Each structure stands twice: as structure tokens, then as C-alpha cells.
Length: 169
Image (cartoon, rainbow, N blue to C red; front, side, top):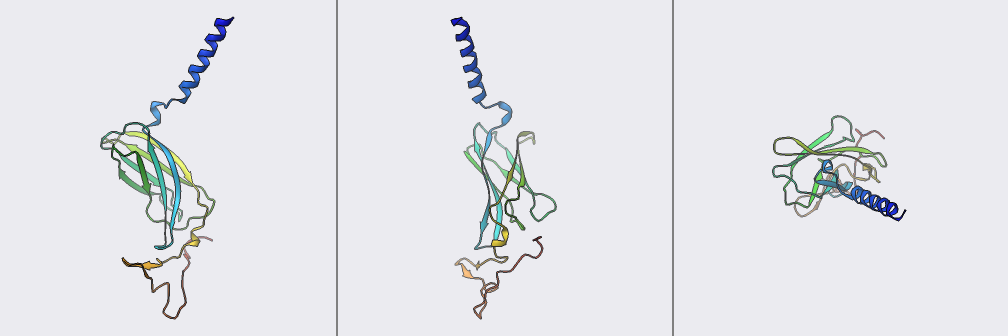
């Protein structure tokens, strides 16, 4: 009876350890962060997704990221060369319009090697805790010394932060 209990305990422990190990088909990275970045000074919003390297990445690897377009239409696609010595990979979309609070937006990332063979695919969603309506439609500052934008801050003392009429309310 004791031997059966020891064998059973050993088997359970081995299965528990095996379940903690990374599977080879998961790929060399894992999702470590995802968010929307709102930069009020230049009136821009973008997706930012970070990946953590957990295994070697082959030379010549490229990340191809497709971000759902909050304004509608085709996804926004970027291609980013990945260097094997990077421990963290940051992928940022082009500027966005029409981001809505609490709405999930899909992101798909594919790592491909130098021969365009897929190494890993990651699918996730990103939600914003703000509406893009908090941003002005024009940059608040212009130039290298952050001069107040005269299109926003008028000479008569008034301000015009604008509103993106192309975005559904």
C-alpha cells in the first residue's frame, strides 16, 4: 500500500512539474503588456504591446502586428525587425483615431523567421479606460521647444481643442 501511495505521489508531482514547463509550440516570447498610449501634447493615441523573450529568437526574425482600426476599415499593420539579443520587444501602432472607452480591440502578432516561416502567433485584446475624446484634435505644442500651437491657443485668449467629427459618438 505504501509503495502504491509513493508511486501515485511521484506521478502527481511529475505531472505538476510538466504542466509548469513551457511547451515548444508556444514560441520564444510571451505577452507581458498591452495598453493604449494617449499623448495629449501631440494629440495622438496608439496601441503599445510588449513581449518578453522566454527562449532564443532566431536571427532575422520579424514581428508582424495587426491592430484593429478603431476608426473602422482595414487593420493597421506594422513590421518590426526583432534582434536576438532583445529581452523585451515593444510594438507600437501608427496613430489612431476614434478609440472608445471599455471597448475591446483585437491585436494579432505573428513572429516570422528569415524564411517567412511562422514561429509564433499571439492574439489578444486591448481596452482603453479613456475615450479618445479626452485628446485635442490638434497638437497642443509645435516645434522643438514646445511652443504653444497657435491653432489651439488663439491670439484672443480663446482655445479650440477641436472635436473629431468623423468618429461616431
